[in-house]
Image (cartoon, rainbow, N blue to C red):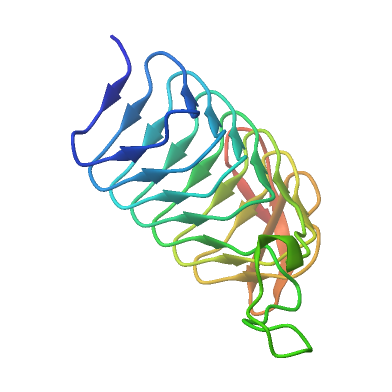
Length: 171
C-alpha cells in the first residue's frame, strides 16, 4: 500500500507524509507538517503548520490541530477534538492593531505514545497527555494528564487508570 491523498485534500508542498498513510477528503495540511507512517487523517481535519505526528496515528473527522501540538505514535483522536494553542487569545494587541503571527505566544501541547482522546474534547495550552492516558468524551483538559490516567469532565479530573490493553480500573 502507498500513501493515499484524496483529490479534495489541500496539502502544502513542504509537508512530509510517510508511506501507508491515508489523507481523506477535505483535509488541510499546512507548511512543514510531518506525518508518520501508517496514519489515517480523516475527513475535514485541519493540521496547522510545523506539526509533528508520529506513526500509526488515527485522527477522526473534523479535528483541529493548531501550531505547537506534537502527537507521538499510536495515538487515537476521536471526532471533533480541538487542540488550542494560546492561553490568552485575542484578535487584537493592546494598541488595537490586529495580531499577526509574531504577536501570538504559542503554548505547546504534547500527546504521548498510545494516548486516546474521545470525541469533542478540548485540549488547552501547556498540557501534556501521558502515555496510554485516556481522555473522556467532551472533556476540557486544562492540566497535565499522567501516564495511564483516565480523565473526564470539565475541567477534566482523574477518575481511574487504564492499562496498555485499555482495561479501565476506576478508583
